Figure 1 (cartoon, each protein chain N blue to C red):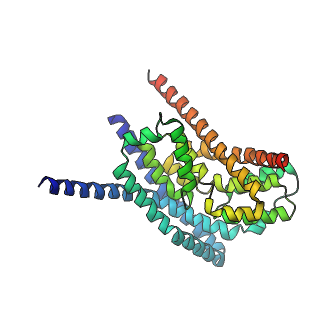
Figure 2 (figure 1 turned 60 degrees about the horizontal axis):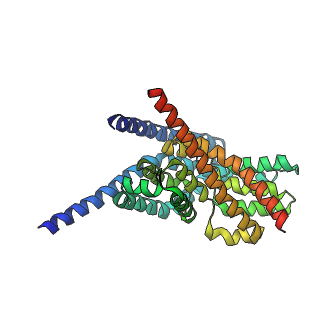
Figure 3 (figure 1 turned 90 degrees about the vertical axis):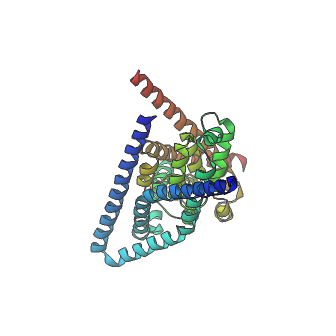
Length: 150
Length: 185
């Protein structure tokens, strides 16, 4: 009898945990769908060749541009590696390319509404701002370290 | 306690309103593009559909993880491993979980919100999110394009940057709660 009660209690706990999880996820779904819709638009209206045409050859400006473009870009990181590889071939500095691929994966301007809505506006803004700054710092540190050790 | 619960409910309510508003804005933007350039917009819609289909397994996995975490992780446990006094263990766990997590960043927000509500430090949420940038399955592709030294150094600096970011966010949070407490007094 006691075991039966325990079993029922355990099943109720499991059901409640998953109900809570799905409820919490459903409330985030409209923003997620909105973000996915915007990413689709972005992919079609801003193809990679448009991105490569922005770099000019000026080291600091390109690094900043790299971070900025990486921040507003979205999609699979492989795309950023491919674009980064192509940019290197075209003579864009490693500083700019590193800033670009770092910002691509750490800053999410397109995902910002979802992040702000779910994790809080203040947190999302501070986190993305810091990630943007760190993408430049990491780019500088990586390239300087590479230059020292190779 | 009651006031905190009410505040949370109010926050949830406004976040639900915001999420529907955001969806409406996204649909409106789409409608404008559809009117201006129907062919391109249909391509964009198909790209969005493909993204959505590709993330369905991850969404299911995240809901499963959320269910498991609701079942097994009680606030006491969460604050022990990821809370204020979690120390180095907390930093390490968040960084490792961030590196091991898969899929788009936004599918992890609800789980992190739940964990944060149960006592996970905000700085550790940031550490998790930053470390998602390190994708182990994609390392070979990165090495192909940029070389092994570049990838090794980049990953190392990204982990360091994630910890710095987490620490800064924790300091800002502490500063904010201290300010709120002094205001109340």
